View 1: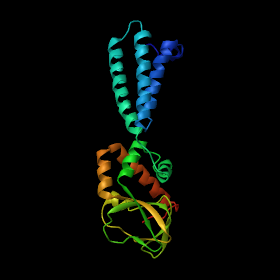
View 2: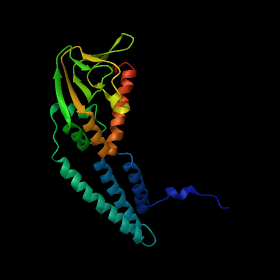
View 3: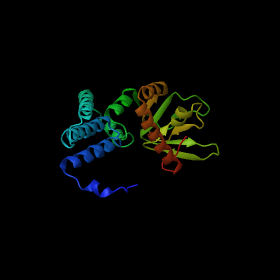
View 4: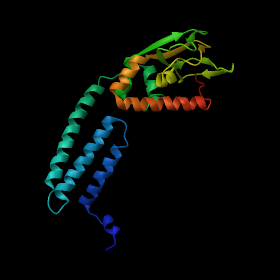
Length: 229
């Protein structure tokens, strides 16, 4: 049995380097969360592979050239629609702040879908947002203000800017386990659970990203950054 000689992998010319680049770009595209960026890198990968398959081999691999060209065409068509849709996206100052912090893992189009079903609410100090052992219809996110969660042992925990309220009952179902009351005037964003679940059901990628957002919030609460209900 002959041993494998890897030295030849690095003794390459222009077209061989282009072939390696096509697979590097393809691997990179799998790491991107934004679908537009993913498709742009995938186009670059397929184009590089097409050139390599036609000019870099002893004889052109016409099957690879044909199908890579098809992949490029498909991605270009989808990019046209993505760019067209994104040109109509505009956010308020508050929405841009949320997008750049809490929802940074979402694409702009995905975040727009979330904000379309959201409501902005403002309440005074001492308002009850959640009652214990009651069904909670909404998932809330504190934008500006502060609230307290009354725990079963009589202690309280703070909920500050960026903290979710009701996300655990959204994930697990059931009633709220602890009451939540504002301790100063508070603005928050609210989503009806049924509306939010509907958007996430129609967009599986958004569901995965939202789970990540909720997990980060829970981690902050467990570490004491934002007390939680």
